[in-house]
Image 1: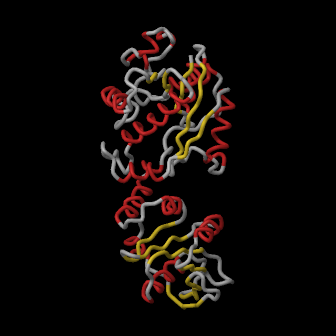
Image 2: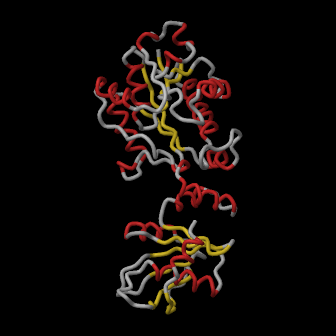
Image 3: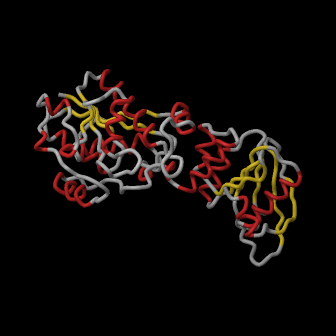
Length: 334
């Protein structure tokens, strides 16, 4: 028997795959990578490399499929609504199970494995919701959740004795201790910690995403840019993104395209690179310079000369400005 296991990179999905291997099932992993993943932090954002590491630790192949614009459409208009922020967890789960279904058919596999735990997540893992998601994905009875199987309805693989229900588990709720103890028993030690696996569940990123949607800028490039720097809304048509360190300054420079504005500190002053995008007039340029000045190492100076240019101009212009006031900065922070 063969099964497709949805692999997030977290402990629960790894445990689920390992449990099924223990029952003699040939497991093929599938990781659905979205623009909002954080699972690959250990590998400097290289999802494929991270999933190769996960697959090797489990002894299974892991196929990575990258979800792009079609996933953004789900985030923008979720049929089943959002969770606490802009996380369309139910629609996301249905979509990913659809991808797993496609892989199941193409690899002539028999069922799907997930690491879901009943009642662990408020929006998508209550028992009735799990059942509804199965129906919507066209997989009723074909999704095995080894960690909670004993408190869920019997699946087709159990009914047909492809797998043994007695060797599955009855985990329920948010308590992580049972999973950690099981991981030690199964010899799984290198795994990501729970929570923080999706930018859509983070309050700060949710504000940026809502801003992009509101201003019709919700696309793959802008979502990638969202991960870097401090973001400010200067007008309905202009934004400023300020780097927080040398690495982010370099990332922002790589994002610069024709028509953007680039703001930097004086040569003799430590400070950020800032990327301006949208429609800039003189007053907005001055405002952007004041914000850039705020984050410079001013050494008790009241004013600084900030350099700026509109790409692709070669020469920087200079403007002497005072720093923006903290209370004014807070009003425009996205």
